Length: 365
Ligand code: ATP
Ligand code: MG
Image (cartoon, rainbow, N blue to C red; front, side, top):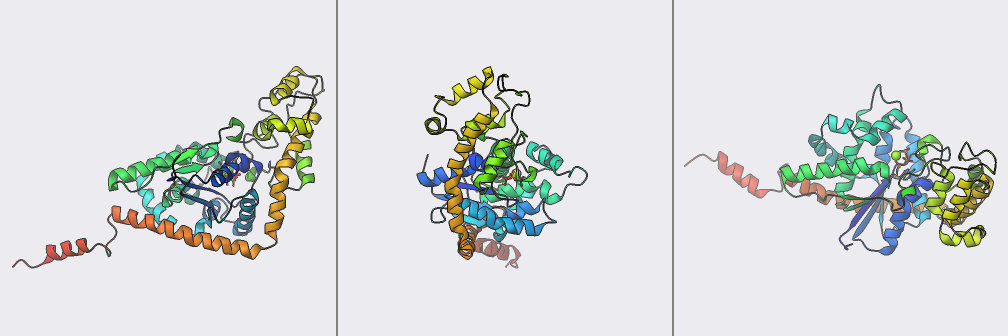
């Protein structure tokens, strides 16, 4: 790991952040920030991207910008150590997107598996908004504008990173070495790659209503876990149960640490033993869910408390974001200068060009 690392990630302001965001990306960002092993860190609220599939509900996006900012601060992102900003306030990103569009084909965009799934989820098959269809290109602009080397995200973002890398390679090949090729940083724990929903669906997602939010109060969290999906064939305590595809155990994989047993479930030495008992039969869902609830409350309580503190001064948060946008704009403007120069559309700061053209048109003596 070098000090040259530049980290960038973001979230769409389509709702409050949930525990899937936390294990998929947010927890990693805070760890990276606290380790201090990087040159710069940018975290942004992707409001312009959120509008590509929420164009009819601008108020929803607007309201959730502050919710996401609060979630960031509550989780421990620190504006003194990372730049927090709002995507739409950086117009340089639109310009980069416009140029990158020349480097991507329609069929390449159609192959993106995450976008394919999202189109189905939103019933966009019959008519896909162009902005939504092309959001992987705008995401490449977000990443490259800040010369990001490292992008900590969940597994669903892999195709976006691959698209960004292709754009960088193509750009540098045609116009000369200008852009930095980013690398994805996936969670190292398999359960965190794509945390399932409380309904057992493949992905916890704001748009599916199957989330435990970081800001849910203790009662709501307890209630959501109590009613969450488990193995549907595990009807009686003595029945053998299935751990695979059972989100209660996936959440334990993502959040449980060895010391939790001592604190909340001392009759088991480890998660492996707990799983083995569930598989054999004789272990009820209620007991496992109680254990999970205790762990979740322990994890979420400090986040809730910090959020409440930040909620007391909302204008200060907008000030912090405004400052972040100014810093981010400066960084993006530098990259845009390089891009314009490389693409030969920098007419007025290139004295050589003006001299050359003058010579070309000079009457021959
Ligand atoms: P939307 O439904 O509006 O797309 P979302 O819940 O998918 O919202 P995003 O803002 O698209 O959230 O994703 C932000 C980040 O969180 C990305 O890095 C993504 O990989 C990660 N992420 C989102 N959901 C999960 C999940 N269930 N498990 C792991 N990571 C996740
Ligand atoms: Mg998403």
